[in-house]
Image (cartoon, rainbow, N blue to C red; front, side, top):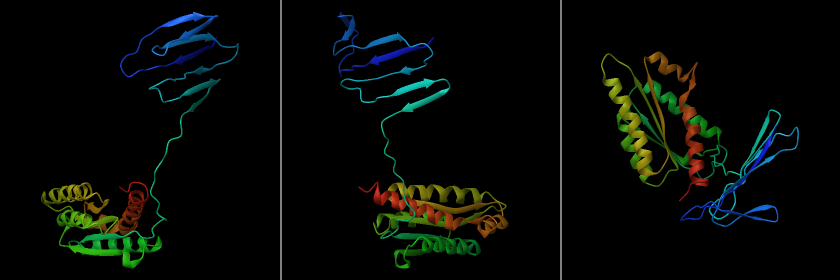
Length: 233
């Protein structure tokens, strides 16, 4: 046997009280009170509804159940997302590490190819070379603070060796790119490969695993669009 439940919620800023009075067979709630009504539903119906109203209660939620079907209705939610097609006027910088250049050069070519495919003009792209992945973060932050670019793409390749140097460089590169984005307010995209060996790196730089430079370029476009069209201060 189903029940109907309805709630009228009145939440003043300083207090909440429970009070009701009876008038012509109906419960009447004053402006400071909360009351819950439970009613028998018509035979065969299965429905549960909640309604909130009054000062301080903005949400309105209704949940209806018929057999096994549940439907939730809420107020419309605004969703913001960057676009990879709205690239006109967007400017990008690409910071590339020379160390392991056989890998990073192919990653750069993949990124530039993706920019071209999505209508980013050559004159809107600047490429900055640095010695290694460790130096990417500080340069990315300087470029971001220059206010010339909508996103910074950071490209490098760190390959594990026989010492713990790999871990230090990989962790520093990741934290450096993250800090650059936070401190400059400009999206800085992490495109640094961290691989166990050269074969893995080459597979991700145009080999059988695709080109991660192209993938991170698309990320840069989407983030630049998101900031420019939706999050611009």
